[in-house]
Image 1 (cartoon, rainbow, N blue to C red):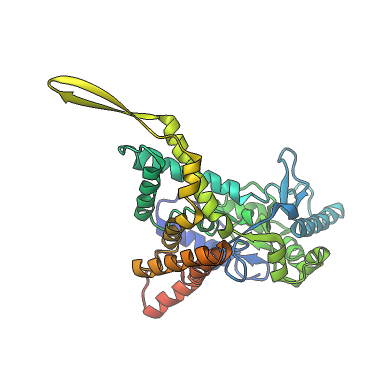
Image 2 (cartoon, rainbow, N blue to C red):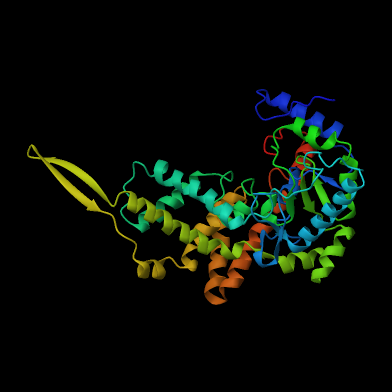
Length: 401
């Protein structure tokens, strides 16, 4: 048996890169129709960006429950994904029944669903909680915030100091590394193994007697196998074999799959942004609703209590409209997209977005904002185009890929 030492506690990044490269080339090479690297380039966003480059999330109404391992709770995925998975499982049951596959083989002997759909809005809420806790407890630690206006202004400044590494909007989050393939509704995991341990991938999957059978059955039923986590099956929405399952739901093309099952994240962004600002201002207020100032006057110590302002909903509704928040929103989106536009260009885009909101309607304004940043997707650092451009420039610096 070959020994692969690729795991994240290896001290040398060069050694880790070598072990990862060795693992992928020797054990996972070939089989491109069924094995897919979901960490490479734009594949990282698979199932979270549609063919028109919209950032998306699946609708829960089209989820089905897959019978899972005992005690795992409800594991879900999009209905046609569950159907494909159940067909794969039935093939494995038949194989174990006739002795082709050992029934006591870990994971592959009896296929069980360990993990499936994860609500991206809940995953986002957990992420943004940490973001705002850092803002409240670290950035604002020595600042006196007396009202929501000050809080909003400081948050604007805070965002300007941050970089694209830490998204704020739901759209920025869903296309970032902080989201994952399971928020697409297209993935089901049949093991609880760590992606960091390459040796486990070999022991429980690639080096087993039935790995070739596993690949064949997944391929014939329109499912990818994740190269880096071979216990994860992901629907291949371009596979003719998947049509058997999608056509049951009147879906005959990738465009129909996306249109029927997904919504655009950008339609939630402004509302989520304001709600989070209000939530975490209230948390800051409840933690300490006043400031105490101490002055010395005529050799006497005078204490003064300065009360913070509680949120006035009518005031918020009147001032912090979606129209008003376009400035903050587009500034954040520009940061999330690696500051694609300079200050002058960004101001012009904000001006146009506010014009559309005021004189046309909200949908046109949001659509304009989405289209403005949508065009930047293929040229983002880390994407295939950025790598090609670096190669053409003759540079070996791939630090952001």
